Length: 315
Ligand SMILES: Cc1ncc(COP(=O)(O)O)c(C=O)c1O
Image 1 (cartoon, rainbow, N blue to C red):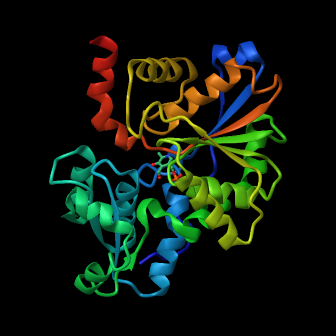
Image 2: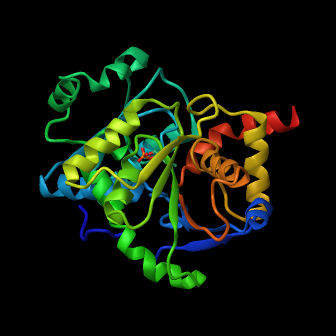
């Protein structure tokens, strides 16, 4: 069982200045909040989204945790690691049919029990009654929504905000003008909007195609938290779809990594940074703006994409 709350999330926040020519030319300053470095296994936004769920499971005396995701899911990866570390059994409900991926291999190594739902079965995840048979099969297990979402997930992310001022001192900043981050479900973004309470705008770069679903989800989380629906913007960074890669993205990612010294993943962080470049180059970000770019992790999920990215560049 977890002996103490926030075992990993109390680790110091690491900030890194980003030097890239397109930023320099526009006189825009970027500091990357390296959440990917918070913990080698519970990397990125994952720890912050999970911490309140883990606490609730511990308080409920749950013997285990159940959640769902795809075969490359960063969320399930972190959940399996957390279960292994803190003494919870874990059950993963996976999209699609049985396949071997580096992520699935890690889930199994950490002892996660895996059920493949097929595609139709996975689509049913938002229907009423979806969890019932799983709760009967795994009695007392705590169910965590997809991606570690829900209000507990958002509130865990909100806790990052008050920790920023002291971390910023290490890079010589006393404040910032905007926060940029990748948005999947929008839970992390909602958490930062809650934490910011209107002090800084939060810009979410959508990893999936634009739809009202993320906006609605963010609005619902803010309403549940009793926070005004303001101070954020969502923009389309998906480049044609979730987990769609193209040559330009692959080239951008490898170049930005080489020149900026920050590893990226092609699904979330590289697309977000590419969207930032577009905004900077179009002049939508004023000279002198200090951007806090939240690195939400995802590097484990990149392993399965590496050969595709390499092929896109080298043919
Ligand atoms: C690496 C990474 N970045 C960003 C996100 C998006 O987070 P959210 O669903 O909270 O918007 C995810 C998904 O959880 C992720 O795995």
